[in-house]
Image (cartoon, rainbow, N blue to C red; front, side):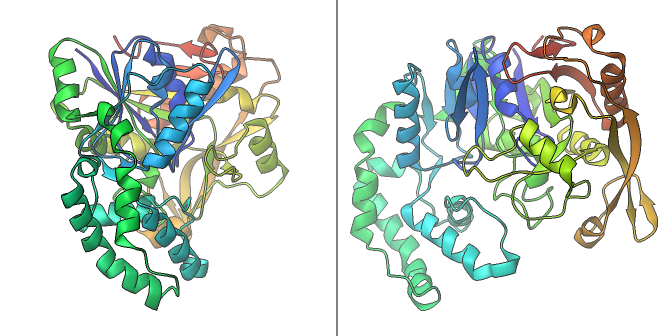
Length: 428
């Protein structure tokens, strides 16, 4: 049975939550394979908006079992706050599963994240300050704490002691902060043990067993392709691999079991934080896209940088992830714009690049080469088929599809789950 993967094709905030929610009613298991509470999803159901951070968007689907996979880093305090908030609104988190192998975000990770960003000054990455990067650093350095460690006080204490041995030196001698007490951290985590225990599973076994039983599994990637630590616009990236290959690692599902890989891509481009952005707008049109599209971070409220659609990025994302389909979102935001530019290539110091430049320096100096398409003024929020779209909107979609490296199988024309044109079934 299908194992379907959803991956952001830009710098995040493309509408992956909406795509997950749209498919969620037809899948049995929804897995979050990477990231933490640094990347949020906004889902609108029946006019009611839900802002999800650590919880998979599939938690809003009544029939799906949501799983926080082994590739995630989990802030337990944030997790239970989010669960409590959802249940206070009538939501149901009783089916949630958390991987025993997922790593934990400790309070000292958050401290280090914030002080190191300030220390970097102009070279700051623009992190959310939620400790995600330091937690992944500990994972790779083999100093990390895992969910399963909360249930063994002896191992937990040993690991905390090992992790803090160097960090306290750094905090005190470099950042002029107080040292962190080992016992304080141990007791902090032990305080979650009782509530956490019923949620914890061997996620790799759980997910693969679901596939063996003929169930449909959906993998809901966090962040996006160009935030991938290997394939993104390094160093302005996240600390995990939010590409298709990373989702396999972060869920324990082998690549041969994946049947569809769906790229989520916005009808324009946005970015949060620092880093190069060739099509970025610095004028009134950028402000218009920001306000009309509600381009503010789910977690931080930071305004997103806005720019035109970048087909060069789309082709690269399709290549890196092996997309079988694209889900184009927020087409409605472009309504009323007289002429819509699309970046089809870059000019780098007078040389045309039809594909992503090889080096960081070249991409930093890339200037967009645009093609222009006539806009539309008609309301498209009720469109159910491509034929329902105004001719110019339909031509814009077809032009993007031709230049983006994968077929467009769904098009978002509004924020609600029902405001989607389904060109072809994303599961069948």
